[in-house]
Length: 538
Image (tube, rainbow, N blue to C red):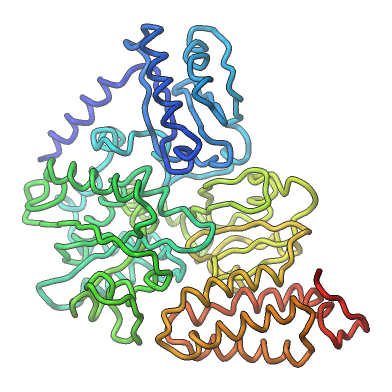
């Protein structure tokens, strides 16, 4: 494979595409609402209307507006149909000849779409994720060719550093610095791992990216391998994501067939192989040392650091670990340039972030927004607010994050601002709550999750999460006193300061943030309430 052959594939694919493309979402969410039945009937309607010469039905990845699925979009007419049923299919095709579609027509100018800036998801919902030719026609694998033939590994690392990209898995560590550290490590064998062990409740960003555009992630991983000197990579994905795994397997097979993965990529000495490792769904395996232990075939347990994975990772070799969204940014940064990317976002948080917007909100689904946008813009403009009543809080960062009160909705969404107010970016879960939500029950829910997901290796996490859960339960039953609140706060501090890994260290965050912003809800349930009343939860 050389550049000319790559461009010939792209041109042949563009020539083969029909003038009208009917995009039907076939991601997990829409499949659950029978989008495959919609697609089948759309194809049948095109055939019945004898429109096959100019109309093409394409199964695509996630379009984002998951709460209104199944979604169908007409390209290039920019028409979107929501909550489409198989019975609507014939009328949608008839509308191409002047008929009237029975399906609900959406508004692509709505802030839910208009306020987005799509980098990671630029082709999601536009291409068939199961055909490498569509990815190549959209410019795919040209960034990989560029780095192999026009750039040294050091120049690639320099571009990623200058872009300001930070890891999208939650910690926000500078990606370029991680790559530079890895590149300096000695040794013949180095590894790249894509962390696709997405486990936060309510989060489905990485699953959607893998289902919608797996080649984008593979290309980013290959560029990383070239930059840091790795020849073997693994994608660690949980078994609960069968469609993502299936599409990844097809994508790897297709890329190997075209020599875009494997040996002597683009006729160069660069070799890069990718294998999939399927996890059993343990939340702790999102922590990189636990993930490495699982890939090695052992139990997924974290270990103390240092040494860091870049020094001694998989089988003792230098190992680079980034998550799905981080890798999905790489090819675009190489294509558009580090300066272009660095101009998006805030001073310390560059680029865009994908969020799973869920909870008690009118418009839920996946959004990609520039860093620095406020929570209010996301929740009230894009999300449309809560269906009945007012926003009470927004939870970000999953079990490791915190609950942000409505009074702080004007906070910019970036790494540092969210930490300042007691939460964190996390991997991108964003759950909206209304006035009927009990914040103590929310804290109890996340603590129940952490209690069940602790690996048990260190005592502070194993015992502390159980005791915090019991304390929250006691409060909810109206059996607690002020002394229990004090002990709960002491427990939070102890677990945060003494746990071995990030899961334990951040597990108290939902409790601490609700105590900080919604303390009255706790106090009113105490037997010795300072308000002079006893309020037992019904």
